[in-house]
Structure formats: structure tokens, C-alpha cells
Image (cartoon, rainbow, N blue to C red; front, side, top):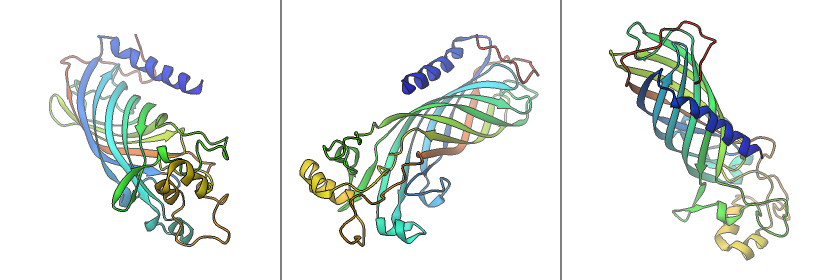
Length: 281
């Protein structure tokens, strides 16, 4: 039910694009994606930043309010091998995943700004919205990258763990962040932006709870699944079954930070200085 509500909100937020009285612009965004989760708690760790790219459509309702729709693609990754604490290094897990996302975000400009406005110069801004995304975590073993979700590495789908269902690789995230916009030519603009995605899954990295029985995993999913379920360098006495593998108390996050290049499609603009009023239709 919660997913239906989120998707409905995302759909409703796109409806304002049907209007015709506002200034419009299109552009691209290039930058990097980062991740925060069980294998890396920092999100802005430059060691694990990977490229991302996207296209965007922005419609301004005034000098202060705008709505932006975007389609983006990038990668996230992390590895216990580079962790600072010994416990994580001993866990010895790694992953990478593509991210494909469709987002809708409202923007608030602190100063009057539209690319179509000849008087605009620059403005910091805030953004918030919803993102629909797809991911597919993989781990490297024997110089090959193997999809993790079908392997049930934490016992998903096994009779011994009825409370662990296979996770979905499509989800919804709450997006927030900000940046600063600059007008560089009559119809061109540039923006520096960082948008954080707070997801509602704990499996961007395929790590969430405790170690499952590797023998049961091997019987159901095969040898590779058993090997990837527990890659500890030093096994605890009696094995790791039931011991902590991840943190169930916190969901995973990812961020897209980069630079936007936009071109206005409109010769006219909305001359409004009322920052807290917005007409959606």
C-alpha cells in the first residue's frame, strides 16, 4: 500500500507539466553517484564514486518555483577490503550495481531565477521529490561479476527463514538536496547540484541482516551462492550462522552529484517575485 501511495504522489507531481503558461528548458547532467549502506557509511566517499549521466526537463512556474523531471543512469559500489575497521575487512564483501532512475522534483530558488529571464544571474536552490529506481547488486568472484539477488545470500526464499522474502530490485526513494544555478548565455544555464536519495530498501548492497546457513543455501541455490553468502577471512568458532552480517536498523542511501547544462525552450518567462505561491494548473 505504501508503494502505491508513493507512486501516486510521483504521478501527481508530473501533472503540472501539462500546463502551457510556464517557461521550459531541457538539459543534461553529468556527475558521480555515491552510496551509503552496510559496506560504506559515508555516502561521499570518493574512493567509491562512479560516473552518472542524465537528461532533465524543467518547467518554471515563477522566478522562485520550478518542477524538474529527470531520467538518469549510473553506478554505485563499495568493498569491505578498503574499510577502516577490522570487523568489516574480515567480512570481506563487495558489490556494485547500476542505478536507473526516473525522478520528479520541486525546486525553490532563493533569488529570482529563470534561464529565460534576461535579468537572472545566479541563485542557490533547494529541491525535494520522489524517485523511482531500479538496481541489481553484483559481487565479484573468480574475476566474474555475479548477480546476487537470485542467489538468496541471506537465506531469502528458504524454508528455514520464512521471514526473509526475496527483495525487489525496483523501489521508491525520497529525494532532497540543493545546488546553485548560473545563467551563462542568453538561453543557456549551468547548475551545480547534489541530490540525496533516501531509499526504502536495505539491499542496494545485498547486505541487511544475519548470516544464513551456507549448507541450506548451497542445497537450494548452488555452490556460488554459498560462497558469496559468507566470505569471511576468519570464521568465528562454530561458524557465522546467526551472527551479524548487516544492519537492519538503517536503510540504504545513494546520491547523484554533478553539473547540469540547460537550454531554455521559451522566449518568455513568468515575471513573479512571490516565492511562496505556485499555480500547478
